[in-house]
Image (cartoon, rainbow, N blue to C red; front, side, top):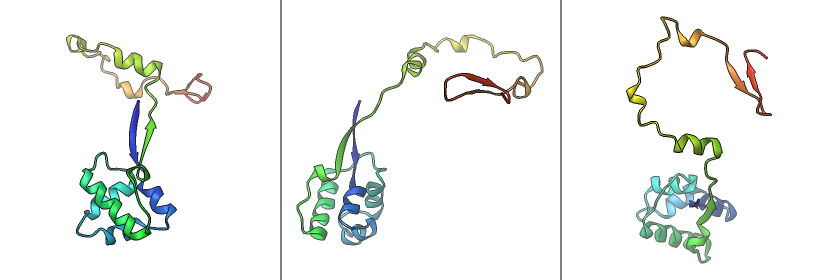
Length: 128
């Protein structure tokens, strides 16, 4: 699957600028919160007018033309692996028809030993 990420942080670093400097220069055009979210790569969407205002402000600060390609990057996000796909495709719609498991008065958190999966994929039980 493909998605688009903001690369403002990299642009700022490459041009010796800080997000704070951009916030100051963009005051009145772009909110401080938006600039910082874009710089951290946390924004999931942005209005085109906001993107244009950021680009104009960066052009003023650097004296160089700025295009959307300077601030956005398309990346491929890996899909779920085979095990995750099996869980996602599973039908859990009838689970409500069953009674909860009866532990017989025992605390399930105190039963047995912890199980871990090692780096080689082998199961390790307890302190093994």
